Image (cartoon, rainbow, N blue to C red):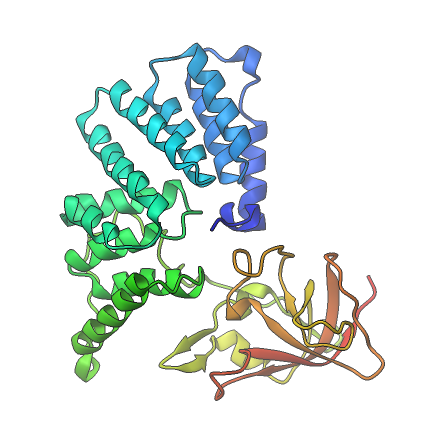
Length: 355
């Protein structure tokens, strides 16, 4: 399972930043070291362009054949497109080229992961996790998650090591992301999730806060993103423009919908929001439809989570047709507070706003 370029690049804003950075890399004819080749390959990886990343890395490697970083870029491109033999060969080459023992150890950890990965979810993940325990092993697992964020199983490795290091809550967050966002329901994942949920429940009994050992993580990027400050734009003629970031702060907590302060204030108001329509049935334009921030092609890989789905109820006489083009809608926002089986929010009496 792989993610689309929008997910790989961390959203539209990040994608533009990577594209801008790529435009600043020196022209190939003007490069005097391996560094620009490494940068170019890494940026292509972040943009979801595996072939571009491999071309940059292999071309650079032909000019600088002793550079372990370029061999690693070849391995990462192969890993991202699930070419496991290719990833293994390139990692072996990178390990042989590097004089740094710490760097070698991380690549050996990655190599063990790549060698087991063709088998899909299974007991081998726990075996790889047990090879390197403690904070350094956890950091190595996180690095794999960060280097190849399209690998939907890699967070399970980080979860196993986080659990062993004493952070069961962080481990549960990672496993829930695999089961929820990636839709992997293998018994290893569901069993680990059940074990961690029971451990976290015991740990937090009596209102205690979940443990999250200070200084354990080198980066929190593979985890759920921290809440960021969001400011509502000013109302225009009694209509509140609504950024998707406000919807994105909603969660299911304790089995029930939970919403941020700004969204609670917006409940019941006339709002305006832009996005792409996605029909859930086979009967457009009359079937059920949701609004999402960005178009996507694969329901299983690219589909946003519940905070990224706005249920639409169109006003009488208003019809939508399937399209990947953005549309701006105006309607009354209704926030769901008590039904865990329904969408987190709905737009009622929705009408298309002409640009």
